[in-house]
Length: 312
Length: 131
Image (cartoon, rainbow over all chains, first blue to last red):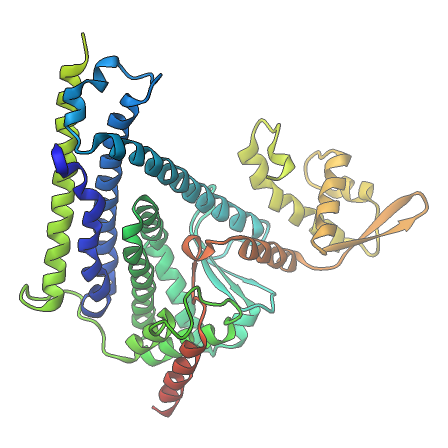
């Protein structure tokens, strides 16, 4: 397998250009799906290679439970710099496993708690809670309860009737499109390989844009939808953005509003290969394919080597 | 974690009931004409519930500020301070305040703004008003 086992660890870099340009050139529905898919494949390949390195590394540790044959020179030769790489991989895979498990656990706990919080109220798609803090959330279905939309009275108070409809339609689009799955997949990918973090941010943004576009279609007015997003952001600005102020480019909300004030993004558009976005897409596709092939190749190679080294 | 999760044979169904039980107790209290005892609440709840369970739920509601109690003779009498929606709002606020990564979990309508974003956004909104 040689150096190929290391490739999937750095190939997520090839997804950076597409993560940067997808939101400008592709329909948000398409970019959410594309970026999630790319992120998922790259994350699985990277984790698989990490696991292969861990096997080789663990076999060299004294007192390991693996067969003795697995620490033979033939096995060690399969990985360049096997001693350092093996130990480093153990140090990397453990935090990856812990943080991925933690992410899934927190995700389900938050969903369950949120569903529990509104238990006992009449079952309706939209639940209004008397609260002076402005918020609106789409709660995916959990513990047998259907998906619901939770809106505070403070949020409703700052929006006009048609803006309220746009906000509800936005949340409904999140539920109908099961956007939480894309968000969770992207989050897990970023935990599996930190190089995928830009991709996670892009997926989170594109999912919001997707819901914005659905809302604008539903109410039939892009300006009203833009105003709803903008007003809602201004009343709920108590939660500070997790970016470096002054250093940052325009945050997600102004970009969303600006996009809604612009024309409808074409649903079927695919940029030609010779333009910058087309090139970015091809780089990402090539990187993802190379990552999948390299990791599969490395897995098969190591399997055959270990099979040969295992005394029957 | 919460102590009721431990030693419970069916934690899933128990947890699911937690919010509903609180809402039921609050609903019974709101039907009362004045402060009432825990035993009074227990009698009027649907299904058999242990007195200690009712007390636990009342104490939890009190911690959330949804009910208040006062001493009457040797025991306490309880009074509802908010309705079911108000209680749900209190609980939802806890979920939202307690989660670091709630943005990723509950898809929220908007995320936070920096000072620059706010200026930019106000400019955009003024533009929409002019149209």
